Image (cartoon, rainbow, N blue to C red):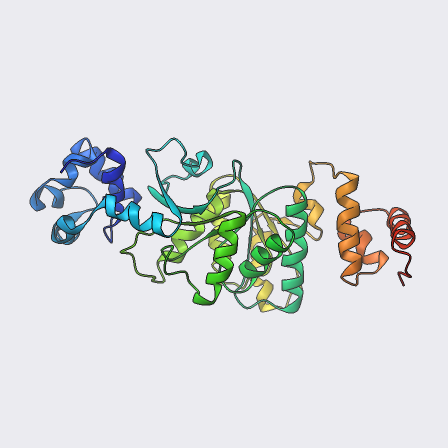
Length: 338
């Protein structure tokens, strides 16, 4: 049975060990993926990066793979399969040296890059508050919040974007059915309704540690910049920042106490040239903030218990303007503001 070029791409993506680089090598060697699919084990073993082991693994499963069945599987899960050969493949992901050849997408991807919010899986209370607060600004600027659905900073960034009615995109380190971690499955469902859940992993791909570094490059690829909220010296968030730097994107890092191990990664990034940020508006230094948005955020910050001086610092507004806005809110709500 002959398939379309995109279906051969989906088929190869279902084979463990054959990713973007090896697909390029196969296409270059045989001229097209159809010829590579039907090649002998000996011919496949001669391809750069394939070798006897992967050639044997592929030949052992080749007859069992069905790109058509794979798309049907995705459709039952409410997902669309998008390949590098498709016109609706995200243009900004093509910036990667080796873009993911196949994407499984639940929901709708944003038409322009968003801003990634990443960090440790075990944040402090301050880290959580900062993730939520910076996310608010991103949503108010009508940007999609990109993250990895992991525990910790990722979770709170996604959650806050949803609470504010903003768009958010979760990049999985698992396939779309085996959402990891399992306790975030309901969160993933909500994200798909308000943004998109994305994976490059097929129905046959198990969830293994090596998936997550691969996921990080997609987080960067879907972003115009990466904010590292709170990260230790070995945090995976630093790998996402590395991908962003490789793409020439902005990388922002929130500093902290110099002895705090949860900020060691942040400080290392700053030493390497990442932009030190202490206020969400600094993510948009070249974009003037509209007054209605400022008032909206001010009201939320006050409702959250921030005092006038804190609000002025967080929104980068003159204290006199903050006090005026708080007075207006007092009149509007007819209640003391403290």
